[in-house]
Image (tube, rainbow over all chains, first blue to last red; front, side):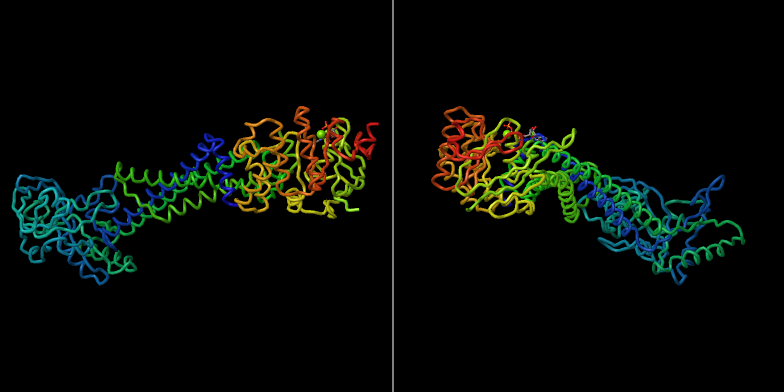
Length: 406
Length: 233
Ligand SMILES: Nc1ncnc2c1ncn2[C@@H]1O[C@H](COP(=O)(O)OP(=O)(O)OP(=O)(O)O)[C@@H](O)[C@H]1O
Ligand SMILES: [Mg+2]
């Protein structure tokens, strides 16, 4: 019976190939769009989550300069007011688990005949803890390296690839601004940061080396920013207040005067970014769903035309004993047939399109079985839903009226 | 007497823009099992309307229709479908075959709606096609055969579910005299050899002579009910 129905459905659709194809096209585009948008949305979500976990958790960044930068006042980080000593004092706070000062700069790196321009951070070994950074090869530099300002360097994956290629960088000597530095280790890969920069394109050296030997500054002993990690997420509030109090006290800032530094909760900022991505992926999905809906309405349109066009046929079937549910099943079957076929092609195109986007635009895409199954079910549902009305209309026709129809 | 059809005070009105138009104005008629009845009357006298009600394709405005001891007026849609499927075989003037289905599928169609298996359907469809002299055409399409052959296919379809009653509304209306005769031979054989009750509408007195009993309609009423031979004398 069902088989017979399928054969009938197939025959009916074969009788009007162009129309069937066009109806299916609506479904194909709808499902393709949904699958692709979900893939891109989830891909974006995945990248953001990845960046957030690569950033490190419960993070603060403390920048030199006023927090209310505007007018004639210098922007954040402009006048160095923070010192390594500040960073050490913050480390003493009970709700802070790790602190690292940073002196960033850009420098030309040379190894053999290769050279590479990258960002160099002067910092302490605690930076690895704060940023949740692993060592892929070799060892990190030590606190005694920091004390004696030795010329040692930890290099990121990208730097290693560009300078060394296949060669093992550990214990090789590179030149940073003409001075020789010993590569003690290679950092583990981290990928992109939230703002899209390659986090592996970096070099870490002891903060003292950076201050004294690499980037000479007129403000002796200062650092550009300090990164601090709270012991747990529920202590972020207290940590922020205590660090502010501590730094105001250390910088001798009068009651009512502006801070000469600013404390920013990076984790909160990151969560905002994640939230934005989530909203974006939901919106992508919603927009794609509209095209699915339009596809469904296309099915309904065609089915209604089909019912009208085949009124006589329905009359004949009823006259020889078809029940209402036989007619209903027949037309529903056609609707489902169209939507399932359209859906299958749509999923293939959506997945293909997602891969293409991934290749050409280098955007992360994530295709989950769940998203495909969902698109499929929704499309089949849309087919049944929009096929039902015309099918019922056909089934309810009075036999004699259907037979008289010309 | 064992009556297949018993009709009492049957009325039918059509609702039109100009108001209700009475078409059948109180028909009383009883047809026994095994009869061969010809229905005649001028155009517009209500013959088709009457046949459609007999075939459970339309419903009367008033009156009762008892088919095989069951009051049709009390049946639901599924029960009516069942009657159309297994008890009645309807033959139309315009054949009413499915244009996209081949002859075998057309003939087998009623069996689809009473859950007969594919192999059995095919077997019975072939038997029926053979019976009406179209054994070799099972896979032709209706558009590939003549009108007379199409009407044979329609008869085969009406017969495939072994009905007790055949209703035919001007089955030869679109056919030439020779072909009409061949079709009428088929009905006669069905009536005489298998005892199937046949009710047949026609405009041609020649065709009516194949039947045994004749009823005449005029303006929605029965004006004659009796022997065919007597009517023409
Ligand atoms: N659906 C309808 N709506 C309104 N009036 C109708 C409808 N069907 C039939 N009629 C009217 O009912 C009357 C009887 O029609 P019917 O078709 O039963 O006649 P008939 O005897 O079969 O005629 P013919 O010999 O031409 O086939 C006609 O006057 C016709 O106009
Ligand atoms: Mg008529």
